[in-house]
Length: 512
Image (cartoon, rainbow, N blue to C red; front, side, top):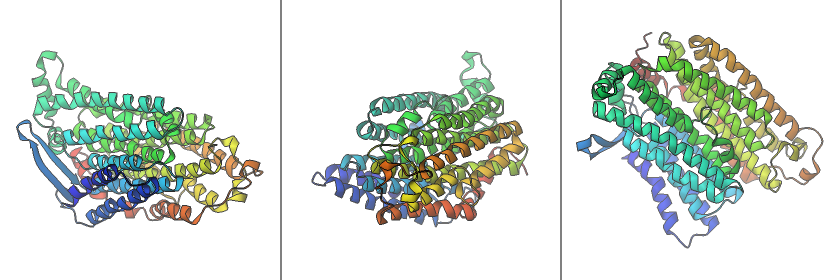
């Protein structure tokens, strides 16, 4: 019942906020912040349970929904999904604390954030496509409204583009799974993965759609492409990233923290939970094309970030660049089935990168939000200068997050990138070699940001800036701790992933 409680508590909090008409804006923000502590506590309790050795499941809840159609409400937590649950509860709490500090909106705003948290919990735990897809789609509604109603001047256009592109990708994914349902009679992820491991999906698709005249391999590849399109928009992968820069720039800062910290991680999770286990038979044939897209995402994201002057847009394109590494590592794991240690490094690195990037990017966006608040809305590189002399604590903590993002050893961003490049160099050397250019460009645009914003003569507009208040330091302290600790002690996260990675490699038939 712990898992069911975790899924429902954010929705209950949203209902309380929606029905409590006498609650003021400040009180609503305090209530939501306190309420968001409950899911974090439940996630920690669930994580303390011992996993079943055969399945790796820590906690599970299921109920028959439409048994005649083979549809069940099945939710389960293993080590991988637990890390994504932990990330969701932490970033949501961080965003609500930022909303309190930046004085963002009131009841409706906080209720939508809690609804988004509940749907994300569903995405990271559902083991049947129908409840997973419902939660996946339901994240669109609060995200769209949060951008549209509380964003900047360009928010209506940015929110509409985000909604249409994400919904369009989901249509392709739905069509793909409907084809699987017709062919094999199930959309359960575990059953589909077992059928895929036994090479049964392609023959059944060929039999069901014999009138099409296409082979089972072609049809299974077409379904895999449809699923990839749905995940690629959310990740996002070039050229499906077009919605991201405007959405990140126009959304209020706490919402941008949720977009970069959590919604993009839905795509990474989908690659690991759905694409790899269900389509290993056809992914090697698709991998060269997908790898070109992943490498293009890495390079073009870094080049675009280098061309920006708006701090939010720099971070937006930086997120595209960093998530391109995740796509590259997953595609490399799908391309070659020869080296188990390289596959393990690529997959574990992808999950670590997703978790660590969620914390790091949220931290930097919060710092940009503080700069924007203090400067009266300014946020370009030309609007600041010499901040280190005026706000040394702020610059030190933001600088630490920036150096973590560019992969400085000893901070959390380094570990995931190192593991991913270790795996990809062994599996697809040319992709890793070309993507190193993205690492160099990342260092260039981040160091340029540090030089222009923190150093040089103090800009007169920043002459009266206060350093971080005690409240702001308390908000940033846990985030900085989560940047430092995994960098010095990565095993604190890796031990959650080892057994799940081994099971995934067994499904992919990758032998030691």
